[in-house]
Length: 420
Image 1: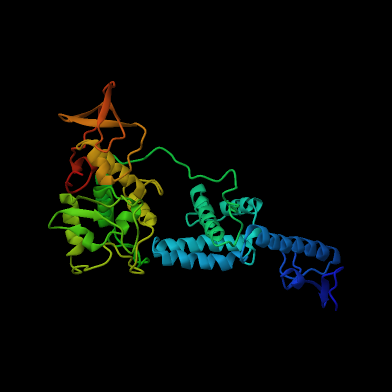
Image 2: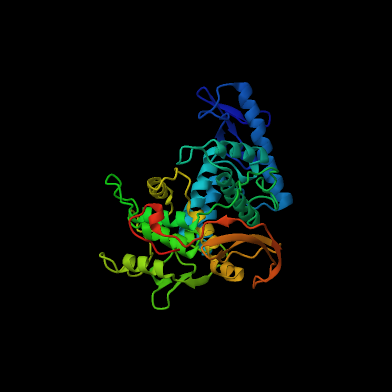
């Protein structure tokens, strides 16, 4: 059948197709949104043809006026984006895998064959709503932080597409979106030292369930590393054997092939505390022999980096009386900070945890041991100098709190544990 200027619609059997070769397109089935086959309705077919003509004309104008060289589909360019990102060497393989999962969800909702220039802010908002309804692995749905990670991955793809002239310069429907979801930030949670010791003892008694052969057998060592280094979750789980020096009694956080650090300046070396030294020596030189090179805590299932310890933490915490979800690895970093602030200068604590000092004043309550009690009697205001100089002290009404020197028998534990 001839396709003249008056009609670009033709039929194959009882289905309508469109011929867009004169506009730089191809012969395409006219498939309405939400359906898998071409329409059999002439009116719907005409509307779809009109939309497609406008889309192809827009692509032509972008090429002539805005310099868009070669339009690309979402799935096609997502593959290219991931390959180039991996070749750059600036991100780790686990991060590339996470980006691939997020962009796959974008392709699933927005359409794999969708042209990058045709995705609008309304599409991104609909994608956001769809993500918020997706189930997670804990019986709920994606949180605001997870949704934001998906949007950031899509936005980064558009930044590369604009640099390669696949979309007009400045075109980014994610950036143009006004109200993006933001992860909820609450008050920092930490454990009192007796509670931390109770959790350590519970982790020491933790045994792998027989029906889960790939569960983590060395959770006691992982919990100790969290509590006694103050490292971030990925920093601790990505430690290598070479990062622990028993001769110099140090633990070094540095980037490696398994994970990067949060910032370029987060490379640091901290003391290896005696309690952690004893536990790590048993882990490295135990009955199974030296671990040799590679990860200090390899995954029992894959041999790679452990990515999630939440289920194991729930089992450990449950045996000590906590509820599921109440104990998370981020608390361990706060616990280390709170404990060290009682014995070290603030500048030293900042250096060991390497949390960038905020330019605004930071208010910290400090516990000072007095006899067998602790008095929370000072509010210290710290300036943003690197050495943590104290600008001023404001007196507070003292009240008694439990001192961090304790006996494990107070917690109904059979053996006394070394203080944290």
